[in-house]
Image (cartoon, rainbow over all chains, first blue to last red):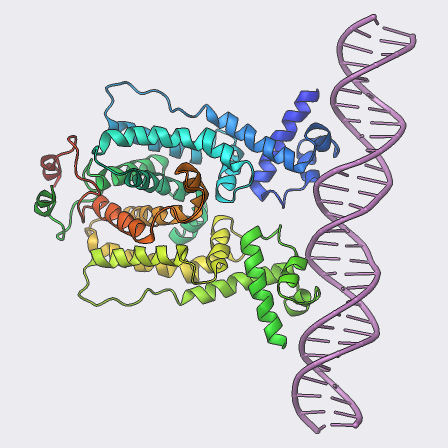
Length: 221
Length: 221
DNA sequence: CTGTAATTCAAACGTTTGTATGAAACGATT
DNA sequence: AATCGTTTCATACAAACGTTTGAATTACAG
């Protein structure tokens, strides 16, 4: 029963922290949600702050099995792998079959860092960044500065993150007050093609207008 | 003296709210920062919540003069206009000559909406979105669904926002614990070229590797 | 100067916060 | 059944919170 309460507290804390943020979440709310006594937090964790860090660490550990991404067949072309990477990222962020608070609490930590941020980056984000970089490296020329590689990676995940972090903007802008604004697969396809085209590893996301012609493109190389 | 206190309160509130968030910011902190009496908040605004909304509205009004973006010469090609748009966006976000809390408090609102969010989107974000769409429409073919137009716009601003919202990640990932990780102009150039290439209005950000050839691109069109 | 309204101030209000305490309940070992 | 360590519980506590109050001060019109 002891460890069960501990776990119930972590889950409840994760939910409440993810929803309201650290300050707005009260120990009483959490204990109520966990059907635990008020004193349980201090008994099991020592205090509110420690409970928060534990919850973040727990979310990070649970999500750590997400990365490295499932192994793809060796002969899978990097373009397809990029599509899988982006699709998986979208799926993990926007799908509803996993506890939503795992990602939520981590993203809160990443946007407004506390002491738990560095651990999240090192143990969860960096492996993902490495996976993405591996894929991109197969698509990018060798004579490329590390800065450019970083920026291309950031441009890729920046697109994906936007749809999660700024869903409120999207809802209001597109006048779709509720519901999934865009289907998951559509988003993944778009971002993949957008990125591939940007690095010259695929056709543009739209058929060309007049301005830029293939001739100009040829002249560059 | 009356209105001066009011203004000092708004400024102080903006700073504190932007830094700590609504819940963590205390009325006492704000009044202290504004050199005002504790009761001043309730006297001038009626309460903490109303002060917050007032601060957001103030930030939004101050920033509203940012949009519409400065008029460009009519003969300026859309590619250059896009570069200006992105550059201006970066400048406004990462430059330090304006009070930082104006944007900070609005972005907080956009990521975690309260009652003031809709107003920010309608009065500040939507004009920007319109400006961007106008530019993009000149670069995009006419037979394009509204969804695709939205997604292309989101892919563009998503890249820009990433560098602001997720600066902590960037710092930790690139091991640049302090300072501007990337020069402003470099970022603007990158995002512009990335976007233009993605929609087929410019060359790829890197010289092509082997995989995707111009011949394949020709076959598409 | 006088009187009136607007503003500031110190103090206190009632809640809610995170945390601490000691007794009660439980589980396992002897 | 008795004991001991662990966990739960109701309760209490001091601190901080947003808000209120009424007197003191200022600003300004007559």
